[in-house]
Image: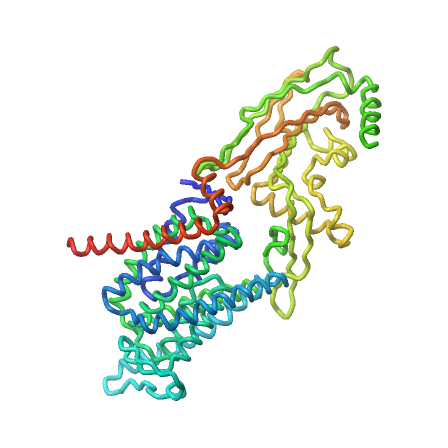
Length: 305
Length: 257
């Protein structure tokens, strides 16, 4: 069944969109990532104009994250206090990110920088997570080995300490705010929720327990992507409601399944799966940059992206 | 002054007898294309007749060329080059006007039914319909960029040339159909019909096809442009409601078991 999208001005198969939404929704629920880093390139691939894809994806992430976070609230795996601290940083970062994005746009190199951002961040995070998860799995298989966690590092020397009960942490608010700002900037530039960066940062930098990380990052993502959606809708008019509805119907259903699957898998398995996926997307994007494209030319609205 | 000149030109052409006595009478199966939610392309039938006072002239047979053009809009074309080992956009050229849609249908091979001069003067074939003059002043290789537009849009089904798809009967009746793809944009689509003999245009007829979004498509589009904040908030409300709805639904399903 074909459907004509009013803002994107293209006609696409409705079931294809539902399926894509569902697939990304499952990932969202499982890993606490918004799934934007997968969905946005997929939307480009089926012919949605990039500007519309990025803006609409932000709206869709709101839905799947909201659905996901409710499931996590039920399991009490959301650290609201930490989420709020991250959010304050996130909104600041998103505002900075939009300014940076518009500057890059004026240089005409925004596509390249977005792709390079993807390759670099996905590459680093994917490999780090992969190695770490492999080690964790190896250690857990040896019965006598003790899983050593660095409890004290430089982060614990910083001022403005706050107690995060759900996470079992007593740390300075400076690192979470900085993580929020950083993720906010990236999410505005890359058109993603930023979960794939925030989740590892929360685990490795802040030392939060994996189970809490997922719900908390979803909580933060909802607000940052909602902010981004409004910015896009009011400045670029690129949020396509019809596209968003189709994606989110698939997405919210998928997120529910994802949360159930996520609860059944072990933390190490969860991380290694996410790591593999991140590396996969990174490689695909890197190869696109390295190999000669079949069409050297690309079209855009004049003066636009 | 321009008007006087125009009048003079009109007088001049009117005084040439051979060209004035064949006229197009055209009918369209529809002069409006409504883009609805389940719009997946449309086919417009064109049928016409040649009205003439005299008998059919001898010599070259009558041929028909139909050109349907979407609104012209500026397009920026970027070219990738290999730099530092990766493929990045290097050159960019802005083409002043390229039609969003373009279809040419002819009654025979294009160059046989229409001379190159007539084609250029009336901007009939796709290459001539793209306005790249401004760009050519700026960049010497602008033609390459204009060709890229033609190539990419032809691959997307937006540009097409159908030689021989106009059926002409007894040099008097003709018909053809123009396929409009699903990824159509709004606007006034100019539809031109040319009658030619020996490659020279003997008569021209112009009309318009309105391509418009209707219903929900119209409503959403207008809302997004006129009330962007409300539109954005509405999108978010739908998103949050759908997220909550699915969560509540699945809770019920699980508790029901």
